[in-house]
Image 1 (tube, helix red, strand yellow):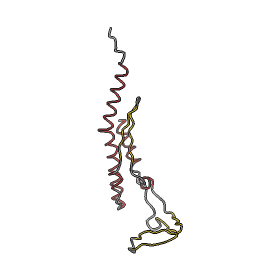
Image 2: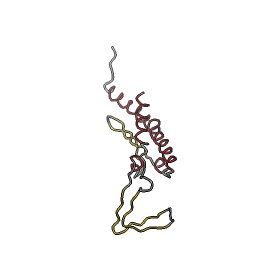
Image 3: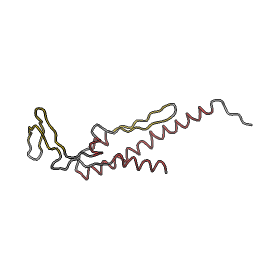
Image 4: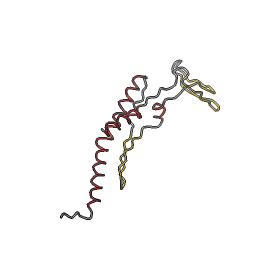
Length: 141
């Protein structure tokens, strides 16, 4: 009869967590970021946006806990505006808004601006949500 060492369960748990952590850092985390980057690049190209900071500044974090490992990707501030889109809306200034109006090449001052009235706002990219959906399919296959 074989007797297991008393630390068998602890050693096994640590080995599994070590393996999961290493795989998240080296393979799965970069894969998720890459899937999203591909979608961001296609979205930026379709809409003629210069938003490369979104995929260039994405931060990948793997956190080890006693009973699990967590993968977290953080994209830069305001990424949600592109991910979910923005409908045209009015921006009110108090007392005055100052912005550069590219079409006429000068600074304009106003108390309100109908933002997105000419462009129709910002279309949603779904880059992160679609990347997560594909990532989940790949990982569970």
